[in-house]
Each structure stands twice: as structure tokens, then as C-alpha cells.
Image (tube, rainbow, N blue to C red):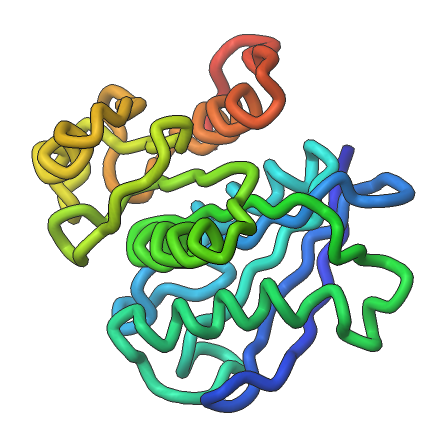
Length: 226
């Protein structure tokens, strides 16, 4: 299934929050996946290739994928807040999305929620997952790519979370991710030879996420490059 994308805004505590919706090509979404992008002070936006790949993977699997721009990026107002305000906005979007008038009849508040993020976005997603669990509304899935361990104070996560990291990540060393994951007995999927931005590894990243979400193999042909 392919996806189609539209961009909207919603009012948040620091001003407007811009977000993209990647719609699945089906009558109704089977869930809503919220995807965080990398650090906004280093060029991270909702159009980042890794974040977009994560979102479109969920859309291909029948989920509505939501990619917000963090504070100060694109049409999102406010200024960078070291993950605190960004988490607040992420959670606000999760709460507000089903009741937006522009989405009336298209999104149900009863749909399961998945959280995902790349690099800095993984920090926001993990913090949001902790808050939702405390509210007794746990996310169905948590996907952390290029995990921000060692860069930001990553919280503990459930053992069924999917953590994917590049062997040759030059921005967030794999050793730092292992140091964070080890006390949790948390598995880490390592892509050999991959750098922080998963250059030429995006099809493999998509396949790993698909396999995790569906519980079925998504490796349906020879390895491709991107």
C-alpha cells in the first residue's frame, strides 16, 4: 500500500505545531504512529529521510503516520527546549489529533498508538512513551532508531521496544547505546556498516520495522540500496 501526505497545524502551548500526515491507502487506519525527527538545531525536520522512512513504513502497514516539526522548525512556533517542550508538544498532538475538526470522521480516539523517533526524536518518543504508560495508555509499539543514548538522558523502555542502531554511527556511538540498554536487558538490532543516517540502508531499516510491527518477515527480495 502506498501513502499520501498532507500537512496541518494545531495550536500548542508554545504556538502552532506543524505536522505531516502520511495516510495509508485503505478505508480506515489500523492505528496512529507518531514519529519524531532529529535535532532541530542541526537541521532536523519532519522531512528528514530516516524519519520519513519510518513514517511511510507505518503507512504502508496500514497505520496513519504523524510527523510533527519540533519547536522552531518549519511552521512550528516556539524555540528549542532540550526535549522538554518537544515532549509536551508530542503528547499534546497525541491527545488533540482525534478531535481536530479537519479530521472529523477520519480518525478515532480508540485507535492504538505507536511512537517512534530518530536520533533526538528517539529521546522525545521514549519520554512520551513513559508518560503514556503512567497515564495507563501505553503505546502499542515503540521504535527507536539511531537511539539518543549518551546524548540525552534516555529513560528506560519496555523490552519489546525495537531499538535499531548503525554499527559505525559517528554521532551516537554504539557503545553508548549498549551502556543504556545493558541494565535493561534490552535487545539492540545492529546494522553492520551503517552510519548514523543509515546511508544505503533505508530499505533494510524499513524491512526491520515492518517485521517487528507485523510479526512477519518483510524480507521479500534481494537487498536494495537507497
